Image (cartoon, rainbow, N blue to C red; front, side, top):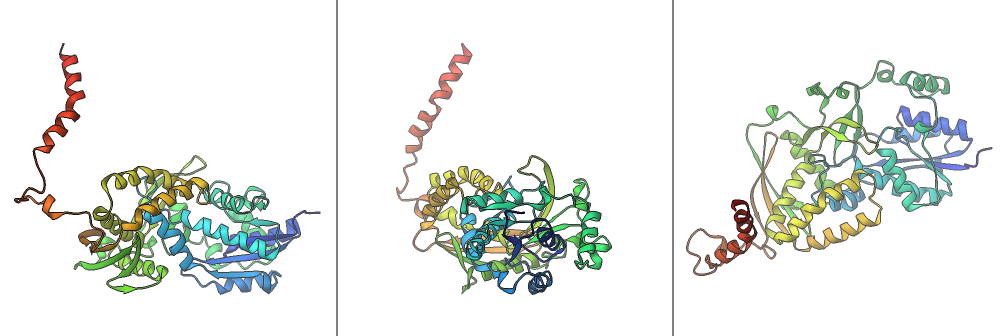
Length: 407
């Protein structure tokens, strides 16, 4: 007799999680609660409800939640205040969604009296770590069921056979081979992995990309756009204020139109292997460039450099699933403190895959002083002779070393 009485499953309604739903019922004999998150993936989510009902999930145990605003406001924007990039290129579109899914899943577990949670991440991937670190941080006593680490359905043929036997509908695309990619989408990005992309020497096909045109096919005329920031967060585009998730959706539309935000990356996974993936992050690419531009005139030099020093550590924490860890919260507090003066606007030119900063200003918080920075007569605002002592002091150790070597 299983000790698991009720489990909350992160459920997309697709083939894999539908198999997991039935497998949980067959293997554990437990009541299943399904949770489907709308993070702006652009898919119709109501079919997930009908599929769950078909397999005996009670209506009150089916949760389909619109989390788009919370996702952008409380997860994406805080991450972008840190200018976060993993391994120099990746904007962490998948990584940043997992702590929110884990948070809501645990809330539902408490609400419904469940004693376990389950996810569809494989034993090879990063997501198992991100989900489960989140679960344990938020509900230490929770039991976690990770089917891919337990069952023997480790091939596509076995999965399909189980689905057919269980009466789970199998779409023609799955029977015929389906999409050549494993994809994950939310308001920040869409990712592509698997099949053709598992050969890092093979170029991704042009018809793979869904959100962006190729830079070659982008408009021949540039488009100018103005972004307004308050305390480090985007608040308006071209003077129009919108909720956070609508702002990011608008940037995605602009970036996609101009071929911005494509990335082909071989990354180092948490479990130790290298993995090749392709990503489209049009809105995030624009946002990152604009945020750095407004910080360039509003942040003290050493504060800006400190943020740059901390950013790779912060990025690794998110990539590796430590969003809810005390060290990430501590870093966030420091980062958010630096953003109090990051207010103003940035004007960008979008053109054939490029995001070009053309102007920026901050009415009350700019540290740029044109009377000091000018190449013309500064009327004594800066004494150039002061540089002489600075240089002599900083060169002292170099001169001493040179004399030693010449003896």
